[in-house]
Length: 112
Image (cartoon, rainbow, N blue to C red; front, side, top):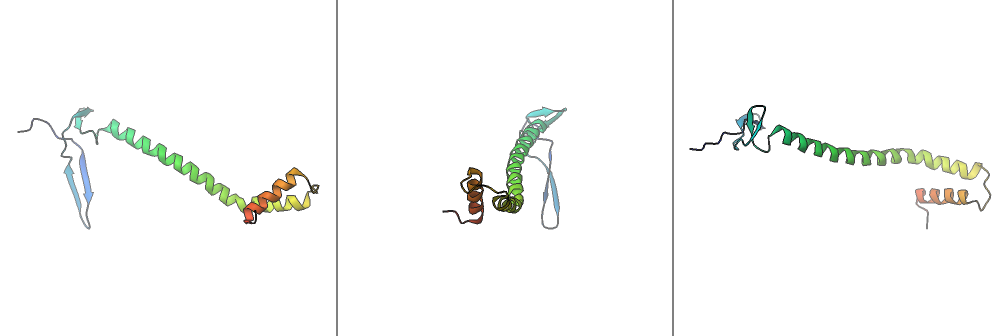
């Protein structure tokens, strides 16, 4: 007979139209608050795993949000660049005007 106690975590699985519950079959080797858990279900281990996953998600989400903000602002920025290039009264050889024209060409896909 096995002397080790089972992990106390209740596992819930869902089928097509049913719900199935059973106790984790692994040995309870980690104690937490007087209960035995396997490594997968040990609450501090679960917290570390979730925190790591949240950090990865937050980093990916920050990059996606930055790209979305730029994409959303791009038409307005292009319009402002066109207004500035034509209405501000830059000299023909102004570096700022050249930079604006290059940015407009790049945004419109006409840069060579």
